[in-house]
Length: 206
Image 1 (cartoon, helix red, strand yellow):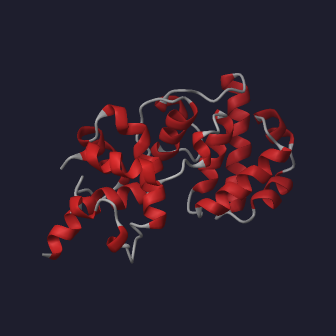
Image 2: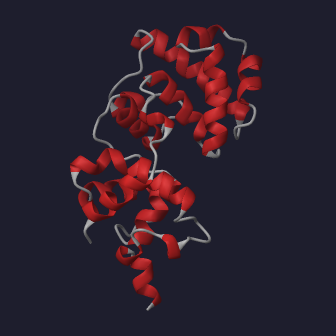
């Protein structure tokens, strides 16, 4: 399959997500933690609201946890995430001079941070070549036939083999937008899909 053709067709169709212009590593880190099991539009509103009050690790640590909970209460598991945000902020202050680390190994040491979150930080904040695999990327990659995997971790590994390095940073942004608007989980809009002719699912229907 021509993976470059897939991304070249999708790029002109989708506006950039807010992460594309937001380069604050702390904002991206906390926003991605908030995004876990939460709709993107809810995450964006909650993140903006939280950072209007507490925009640095020091301010976050000094904040009452009840105030943080109130600001993010629309996201899933908001009480757990409020605690993680406080803990992450404390670690950043104590161990990283209030800076977000720019390496996968160090990011994975932070509570609530898995490979998807770490890759989002590396890709969007530090402009590193990384593939952040969320539910959209995992689903669409398998549906298109780019990979045959059962977990996001496996999908990341296989996409690194299939996708040219120059496209790695675009995978998450394009597939998230594509997955929300066209290639939906239950009722994909194949009739308006710009890459339907490249889709393995279409071939299986024949």
